[in-house]
Amino acid sequence: MKSRITILIQATLVMLFFGCDKDNAPIPDPLTITETTVSGFNFTWNDTSSPIRLQVSESADFSTIAFDSTYSNSPSSVEGLKSMQPYHIRYAFTSSSSTFSENQPLTTNELTPPQGVLASIVLGDSFKLSWTDVPGADYSLDVSTDIGFSQLLEGYNGLLVEDNQVRVEAPDIETTYYFRLKSVNGDQESQYSEIGNVTTTDVLVFSFSSPAFANGETMPAKYACSNPSPPLQWKNPPEGTVSIAIIMDDLDFPGRVYNHWVIFNISADVTELLEGASGPGVPHGSTEGINGLGQTGYFGPCPPNGETHRYEFTLYALDTNIPLGGSATKGALLGAMNGHILGRKTFQGLYN
Image (cartoon, rainbow, N blue to C red; front, side):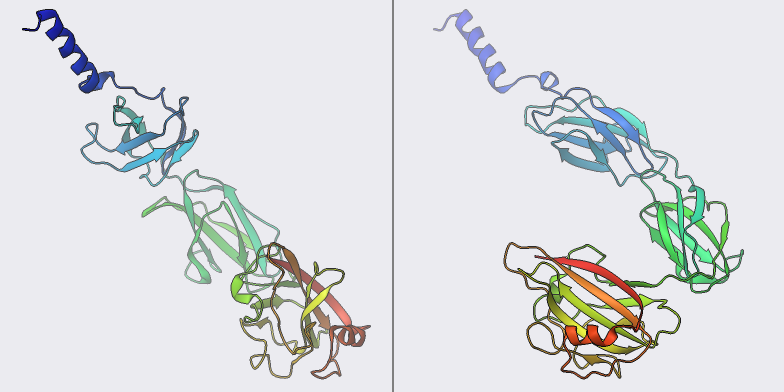
């Protein structure tokens, strides 16, 4: 028969090995809330040797869970909560032997209207709005030609804005526009901000861009190699413009600039080329020339593997039509345009 001492030792070992009291399981170092927003909070903790599991609930007993996620890096953040809502937070190491901390109360911030809404960089066809950020919120913007907001500008009837600034495209020069904003958090909305107004000038800016990618960004693969040409847009060419010409070049081709597209005699009434316009879709009366491959029309970015090249699009506003045909090269077009260029705009796309 085993001695009583032996039985007690064995029982103690079993308890240590299998049945450690959960209350004695490890808990991460204290979690610190560094910032509370309308939709969540930012937090830190010191011991990042193991990931932590963090839960958020509207009830102190965590009978319902509003948020449950695992974190490995400090600092981190929680998003997607309701505004001005009391919550309880608890956390634990992800290991099975860990236990949750005591619950920590927190109330998210009130969803307040944007403050300090200012109009700047006012032109004849646009203006910029900016305001003090409400952390954790998006914004809903209305723009109208009347203070009662019964004549809302198309596209600006509750336009969702994720940043605390936006460029408003206004169609009319020397016109007064009224604007107001709400802060938005999911299906929650604040009251409106104070109504502001701005009057556009008579100054119009000549611009050239693509709705498919911004200047300096990577071009989508759908426009590469033998794929369709990208959409292009321009506005406000100089007074007296009769026709538009566009040239696309690879600036990083070994040893020289390599031409990818030549198109000219686009009517001054045209303000865009749609996606895939090269070929049968070119505007009536326009002409495509010969690219660096010796082919007519557009040839997309197609650099060697591992290389990133810059592709420059240049638009020329001309005071005449160019007396060249479809066999024209870039060089011939540049020569024929000499002395007829009223304005020029460029932008670049990258591709690898």
